[in-house]
Image (cartoon, rainbow, N blue to C red):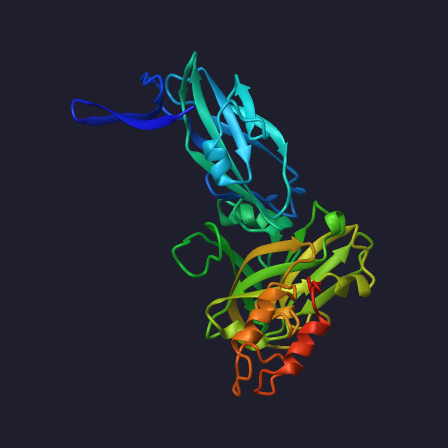
Length: 384
């Protein structure tokens, strides 16, 4: 079927646009479907580890345009295929005619972008819809992205800070809701964490917040790493920053961030934590009951300073490509040693200065660099 887009204008006012069957050239007095759920280009993740589990399926929903009595749904992982498909499709892109304004649930895969289209139907007439998309990322829990909280009071029902009677530390939290500022990493919100370890707040020499985990099995789907983003401030006191986990038996362990100077840098940094650090400390990772974020020496608090850090996008991941952990022979940092890395060596062959093809950093690109690449040929270096 061949389509063309037309607009209807009455008395100089734009009323609607729709798609016609160009072969029949019959006007379709329908508006396209609108208001897709998931939203256009949305990244679909479980809300957070403190409230719900993993994303393995998605239900598609939409609002019907005027004149449509049912809808054809098209779904796939290739934009062009979804855009071009019609009812004659036999590849699986065409999902059939739907009498209601939803389709699903559909099983989803991680690290995948899905494209979908909803055509309005009224008898023989078809109003072709736009192609929408949503993504399922390569992590199974968002962990916490702070998007679900409408105000600080709701935030504090999930995250317990030093204003709570059960928390005697120097922490105060708030929501950052202005995403025009750099202090929101992704989405609309981040967490503002003010720490005070000088004893002026409740006599406390360390500051931490506590969240109780509803999702307790941190081994599900082969989870391997915890990642969080933080944004510093130039006036921050460089207090030790940590993430602590506690299991159902009460065993807890804190991992400390190794680069304290980054806390004074006003831009986003990512902290990747290998969950093996908690395994090796004896925690039962199938029954994690609590997560803590904090500043100071958690076990032996001493008087310290104060500051403000923004946190966002706390996530749990499978093993994946993390460029900072890729080996020297991975010249393009895609975590596999192959022809793309060899191209760097060829380009810089016999160069006598620092260059991208100099794997062993001896200021020469020669057979020694080629040998290092050859020894790692086709190795895959996912972390952790």
